[in-house]
Length: 367
Image (cartoon, rainbow, N blue to C red):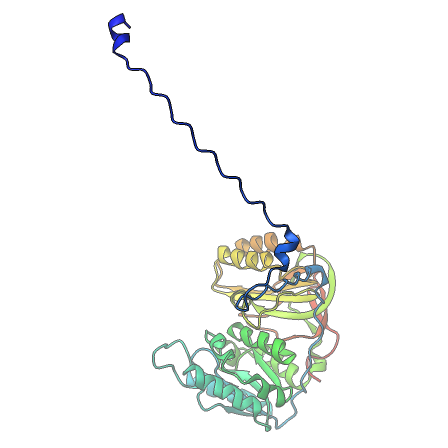
């Protein structure tokens, strides 16, 4: 920089001094703040109760068993889920008559929802049929006509106090009826039967499936050891517990609802499904695991996985997701969407022997 350039640069003006900051008021002591009166409109927060540790959850206990059916017993067949083909329903009713039972179809059993054709009538009519049949003193058992979808939509329309007052009765169904099995267990403390439905093809066309249900309903002492030749140990071992479960997708869909179990500690868990690809089975089992529902489960009995893709792929998912539980797991026990299909009681004490491929009831399914 030249001398001329330096002379052209103007000196900086001095900055004005900053005004001094006023001293801050001292904070009031905490004790004094706690003594300050709060407005009446402000309510103190309630102290949160600590969550119950998972380890302290009680194991499942056996549920109330209804009475076995005697010759002449009236059986109501209701359709809480999907629509029922009339000819199949009539054939199923004839089979029950052949057992010397008195079957009747509920008034809306053959209905179809006016807008949602996958439902057997409106939610209100389906619920009304089920409740009226259950509360009828002349009815000893209610059997679902078929599965599909819709039972979840019915549960909250039922008067569970009235159904409890009607006393324990037999309920039979599977697949979508899993939602009702869980509701009967949670709301009525009632053991139910995971078994075939009267208007379903598997029941009307398969003698083995029919006989398994007949024996359980009318001669339950003859149906204490359950299993098929197809059963194999996925994880070997032997365990005692109380039977619970059903269709995997329905158990998962029920999470967060009033009827969902938060724990299956001490359960012999039955699982099966239909039409679910291996990655979906993986997702649903993972959800149950992450939710803590399977913590403390005593053992797992696996039924059929029809339409779920190559069974080898399904088996690998089942082994991966359930093997870490450290409990016996048996596969292909013989219940679910398969023929012949076993009838398996839910809510009764039993022993699972994965190596022998058997589920042995410690008491008959029905009194």
